[in-house]
Length: 377
Image (tube, rainbow, N blue to C red; front, side, top):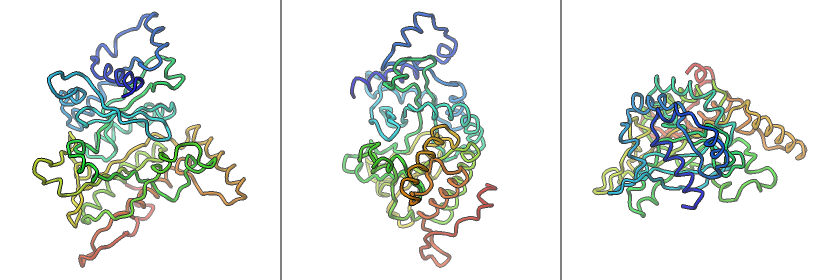
């Protein structure tokens, strides 16, 4: 872990282990605020609406609070607070860490419009939805950390001012042997019939090739499950994406994990499941051919259709298409309507699932539900 990552890690850990009362009630003096402003990497972070997130953890998702806090400590005698750096991934430049036991994942939100959208517009509907749908497949966000005062580091981009702590759907992978870990597969799936300006505009020079290759994954196989499991997944995703549509959210993705089913029964290497309240697609669904275990959750729902950045990119792409004499690349995932994105997203999920027909033969892509049925869910 580099110096920057160590300092960011320290900021996160201090916020996690700071008492809620101290965190919310302490008033900073002038000198402390001045010193905080000149922080470049190690920002003073606080828990945003700590009691609300604790209620989500303990009452809705049934995550034991002591287990949650202890996840941020290293195993062994020292039990010192620690994090494991995953790296800087994606177009946004987000920084990722996991807890030492890999149960929870930390992701920075360096873009101001994402932070604002989640806090001001999506958080309350998200909490209400989780209360009514505790097995929702929206990723479980267990904490939101933020810098309560302006800092130089956040202003110049050397350190993120916001981080989310969330469940790690890959929990269990790190306990496998190195060879077994290589058999785990992950897919970050979005509707592939959209145009992605980050990948294509300006000759694709807006990001390294290694990141562009990961922008849109393609699942070339089929998820072969029973029809009940397929219907459970579609019904839950329909409910989950409805609140995203209502909030005008776009560009979210289905994160699919699969690993060999043999690992679920292998002696000494049985894969552990994510903590908290279970649901079949979160803990693992066995494929019909008994080859794979599948997990799935909804990720990255922080982009709003009416955000200034989305409007700016719409103009950029319109100009791009005009330059290409009308032979443009079609709509962007981040500037289409939330209704259209949801419809295409659910159709994409339908297209990757294969269920048997009444005679037991594989039936690939089922007929997509009519638009009105999606709207009513």
